[in-house]
Length: 155
Image (tube, rainbow, N blue to C red; front, side, top):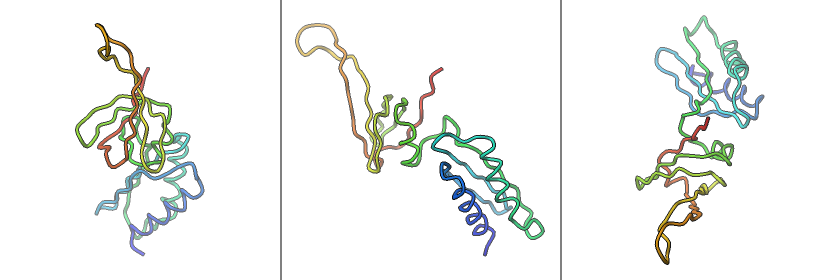
């Protein structure tokens, strides 16, 4: 097996032992630097990163390969990339950029294997008379129409 295949197998085994964790990104460069980004249904703890790192580091042949490993959690400002991440963030506010260059800041009210549902309130001119009224809006977006989506963190 090649170095990359070894790392992939060890990572797969480590994640099987921790079913709430899932892989966001794995990069292995030519100098054997391993970068792993994880997310979890209940977040990712420092201990989760340590455990995954040790599961890989302890089972690779350091005599054969001079490698380094970095395991991190997906940052709060990282764009969502997997359906599982959208499902985990139901009930949170998202900033979504669509493929048509539209930007929507709204509550993620639903997510399934096909797309997401966003809901928000907007002030629009009244249909009859002067002034504005608050209207509830909702849009269903298939994943293919989402260019980028990030969670809005409120303090």
